[in-house]
Amino acid sequence: MPFAHSQNAGSDRHRPQKASPEVQYLRRLAENKTPVVVHLLGGDTFRGYIEYYDRRFIRLTRRGEPNLFIFKHEIKYLYEEEDEHGAEDRR
Image 1 (cartoon, rainbow, N blue to C red):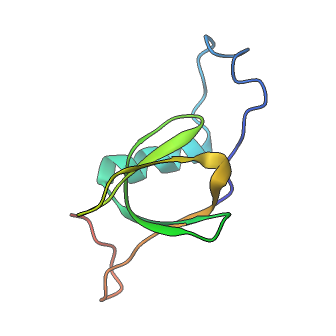
Image 2: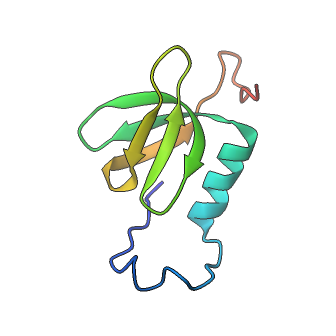
């Protein structure tokens, strides 16, 4: 999933924003606490669920490990993690 990057984030700070497909997807992942796998441009991979997001980063909450703030421009792609039976894990 490619992430949008705002070049002039400060100029439209006070205008109401229409929910982009990216925002809608991240909102659904966060609301459902859907487990995700995040692959970064540098090769690192992290698992957890998205607890918070904004224009520049996501907060990835991980089980038994520190939570991470990951800048969107560092994300290569992410996907929903499935449990061992092939069904999405909705804890």
